[in-house]
Image (cartoon, rainbow over all chains, first blue to last red; front, side, top):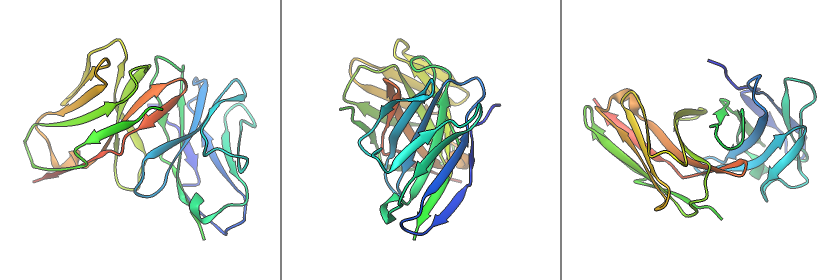
Length: 114
Length: 110
């Protein structure tokens, strides 16, 4: 069964550094998403991406964050100047369409900011 | 703003018992609703997807229902097994994003 692949599985970074989280969505999917889950809290929507541009974003997704699809397979989340409170599990997801299709999630990247 | 609530927060049952997990949402304008399973420290595994026009979906021992007008969904697990122990998340999808509940943490004792 097709999978969404995320790398790395765990990243530790120093406060103030920039990190890039990588995802390979399912190949025939057209919509891509990032979510995060702070330990013990709900899974929260960050951003959706379609046709090489952001289609929706939450209030969490401020200027510190950016997304990119640099080639035909990768989808990245960049976090600039990381803060302690950015420590969370970051999930990438993809879907074929926006209305009728469910989302397939990756296994996540655990980001620890120290 | 969509709010999703799951009850109970935690549930512990003996093996073999049938059980029901509940999910409620405040805005009935949804495209679909998805139930996920999450093991500790792991990703989200999709269990069932119900479209807004559907009333229920079944997969093996799992059955999910949806009453969009009242903002409710239930996940029924038949003949529970220790391997079913996990956190079960409900997510409602609309306009390109999912809103998740806090989850129900299920423990099935052998």
